[in-house]
Amino acid sequence: MVNSTRNRLMIPGPVEVHPAVLEALSGPVEPHYGPAWVEKYSRITGLLKQVFNTQHDVFLIAGSGTSAIDACMGSSMMTGEKIIIGNNGFFGDRLVSIAKSYGLLVVEVKAPWGEALDPTAISDALKAHPDTIVVAVVHSETSTTILNPIEAIGKVVRESDALFLVDAVSSLGGVPMDVDGWGIDLCPSASQKCLGATPGLAPVSISPKAWKMIDRFEEKAHGWYTNLQVWREYAHEWGDWHPTPVTMPVSIANGLLVSLEQLLTEGIDTRMRRYKALALQLRAGLREAGMQPFTPDEAMNPVLTAAYPPDGIDSAKVVDYLLKEHHIQISSGLGALKPKIFRIGHMSPVITDNDMDTLVSALKKFK
Ligand SMILES: Cc1ncc(COP(=O)(O)O)c(C=O)c1O
Image (cartoon, rainbow, N blue to C red; front, side, top):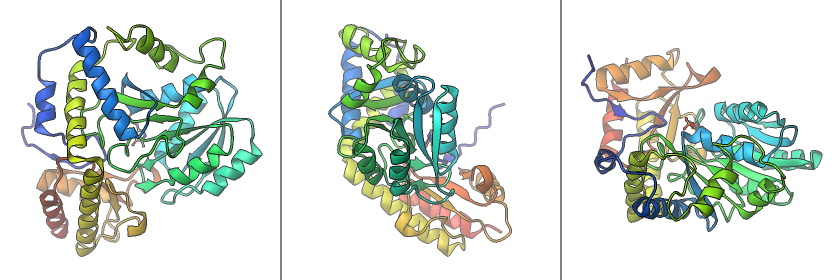
């Protein structure tokens, strides 16, 4: 039997979505071609361009965030080519795994889990490896909540010929992003986190410099489904009736359109200020509950907070307690941090200061 108790989702994605998004999902199934869909698809990609802050191409890939990361790496590089990966967490490790699956030569620039990547170390790696094709980093390292300094890393990458790939799966829509201003060439993301929709769609932005790199091959680099050249071919040649190469999850796209319209109506800056205020409220509450935030306030992530449980307690106990006694779902850490920290996602537009109050008063009662 299905458990009818409704848990409040405060994990690092997927997120609680607005009722209007759920309503949009439940309409009749629509075709992924024809004038109505073409108009809707271009409205969605147009709104996404405002969120990415780009004038360049944006596609919506049918898949989770990883499908877009896969597409960016596999389309821009041939097996045996070199990629520098800034790695300071679980999703940095994931970038390394994807690169290795394509047979790329990986140069890792590491920082400890819980610390930000150092742009100077990336610059040194680029000098030592001038044949690098792509520099890839995670924006918001969801495993530790660390935000990497994308603008500063973009500056050093721009001094080279390499492309800059930024995994914005858990940041786009909740953390400031300036794809064109920061020189980001490939920016994969996902519908189910700060964009406030349900899982299943992966927006990606592609710069003219990235297209040049992608088009240097006589033949297509890797794959078909996740090959960006194929997505461009359909956008250009079939754009007036069938703008994508595959059947799209149109219902999910209907939900995404609503959540994007809500974001743009609220205003990206206003939304981000609201998230920051919630993060500060949570940090103050955690301290009152005797549970210290994992990062100092100066390094806080506005959409995701990690904290230490009371001394000697495994974080799973806090996670279980909140779920069983208060129907609030949060997450433990990942990797070596699994028992040491718990993570609270507040990257949903429907999470309010009341949610934070409820969560904090529950944490204060934890024994
Ligand atoms: C930073 C980051 N990158 C990649 C992923 C993988 O995304 P998906 O599960 O949508 O494929 C996640 C998921 O949590 C993430 O947080």
